[in-house]
Length: 284
Image: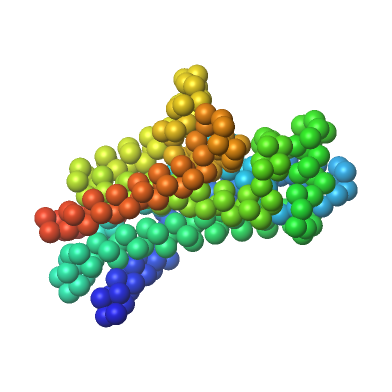
């Protein structure tokens, strides 16, 4: 129990740096700007037809690469200084031990991921105010956008009917935000592990490649099979197979790969604990 308290304290200590380093605020402002900008099409269509928008737009926002890429760039900015070494790190690692210190940093990645995803989700809903109308259904705006071209001149992101046909609104919100959280955690843990073994520049490059991977696959004209190797594309529910008969990745495959990859990266980071040398450098 004492060890767990130490790990949690080390993780939460990192959040104090959010108050003094503008880089963290820039990442959240970028995310808010992108989500707000692409949500305005729903608001504009709502104003024209005088019908409120249901709060279930996030699955469609996360299905557009133009939204996801800057959101992932903000994640790279959020975690670019992994493994989060600062002036007090030598003292903390000596008092707590390198293994517990690393566990604290890994826990911080997961907690920061949770905060970031909750923030993006909240912005996707709040940005619809005052044209927000709560309902447990998809609502007339989202249903109309999926079934007709009436909102084509207003809504900037695709609203695939297959998503509405395959999931309830609450399920789609939970699944898309959950997959997005795993993608964010994957980028953070990948940058953490690569930085431990190869240096900060390599980790940042890894994060940028992961952020750009879905766009690169799309532009390359690769077949559907490439989506099995693009985990940062799996928050787009329209490309996930729910029947078991299409060649696209299934939901269970996406969840298993993302969770498994996060566990492997965390284990690889902890394996480095004994040989880790703390090098205090100026934060980015």
